[in-house]
Length: 335
Ligand code: SF4
Ligand code: SF4
Image 1 (cartoon, helix red, strand yellow):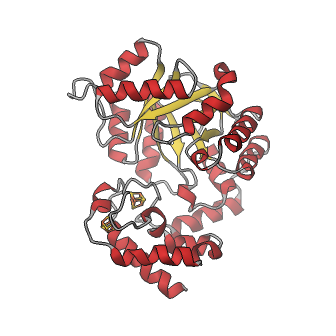
Image 2 (tube, protein in one colour):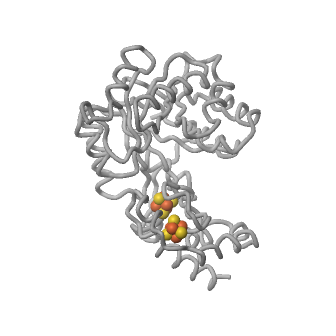
Image 3 (cartoon, helix red, strand yellow):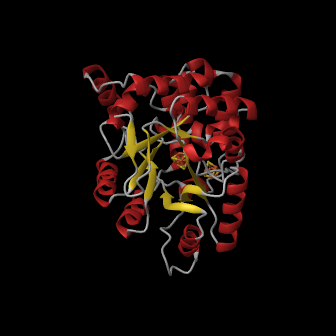
């Protein structure tokens, strides 16, 4: 299966979506090369956001000449109607287009609905009426909000983290979306870098014919890997199944997904990486995380003022300060 249909939207795209968050970290020309290569190799779904600094601008720069041949999804974090229109107009202008295929509420803390007093959903409908957007979507990291959005019948696509580490409740969300004809866009299919075997990640998601993974791509080597999987899809054989089972055992429910919603930290702690350090030093090349720079960053955990900002903003309900301290203790012992 190399194509996927996003529910009732009817959008039919290459099974590999391009997650355009990481292209913020590379130059405009490097991004152009990457995006052009992706397009030339059949990737035709690009997911970006107003919040991803210059990601939209880079897509507009690289792909506006093939606009009609690709699908673009963007997102708004606006919490009021004025902000909604400002962000939508900015996105359209940076993407050099007059419509978005999917416009998504970007990880709101509630499920926007008509008559909820914010006017946000009504603004979506108006934008759709005006032809500025074609479909209404929502992204979230909280299972409760995603389930509520699925049940509401108001959303044509739902974007949610989904990988082989998914819980039963998360799998239920995917199945519900299929039942309701809602397109399911899977973010964090590599669980923010904790899953290092992309073939296993790919093979697992390929079992779900309603799930469109958007791979966060920053390097040509990563892009080449996913392009090669379309030609030669990895099969969920005994070897890959064992890797998945082992990872599931090792990564228990309270691990940090690296989403960054707990930031900023008043003590300047790099929470998304520090809270996963025990896993990172064992799963990634250790030299990266054991150098002086990282030792300094980890040391900042001692400066935590226990304000609980991180804990209160973590969509996974983690006790972040406690996890940070546990990681710092382990890190010191490890080195
Ligand atoms: S509790 Fe500590 S780690 Fe969390 S935001 Fe406050 S200072 Fe930062
Ligand atoms: S602690 Fe929670 S909010 Fe912060 S990066 Fe980890 S999963 Fe995300």
